Length: 255
Image (cartoon, rainbow, N blue to C red; front, side, top):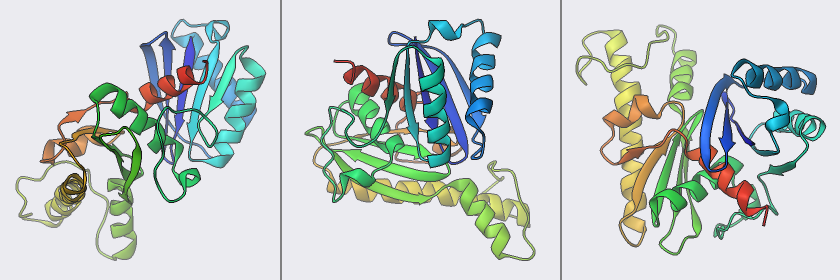
């Protein structure tokens, strides 16, 4: 079995694959200073509580945008698992040309999202990942990764608004009664939720205009289910896109 791990700035998502099938998954808070020993206990406990054994795991695929967490998880995987470890980064086979100015700087999560989106939905394709940042990644009709856009995520925008203003407080990211907020809470909800949906729609429309063909637009990430219902341009929500991309890249590097 394969454990696929995506370490984001805010959340860490783990998936357990039996061949091509995702049989279980977990979404956790990312703790940047968690030690390798803590991760070791944590992973073993998660597997055990759901009826799996560490001995059943014979591979790990890891994508991390948090260097400290990446180092700790690599140590755990090397110590605990008798199998292959694939850390997404330069030199790892992805089956996809990276046609940007500096291929080494593109984030591991963006690469695996692009790989999975192209594999599952064909090309051209646009992947939108709603996380700490909102990442939009583009694969052209020829199957090459050609870049995209990075914007502040919904929660980052809310935190910045609260920090920069004296009278505003945190609100739940739920739809207000109307776009015209009749009180401060509704006005903030309108600006944050509909504003972020509008940001995504605006970027996707500009991107699609630059891409040959008609790309599918697929969304993933912890906030996708909150924002996508208010977007015009996103056709599909795929909650397992990143994990599927990790599995695909892992398999490519076993050949």
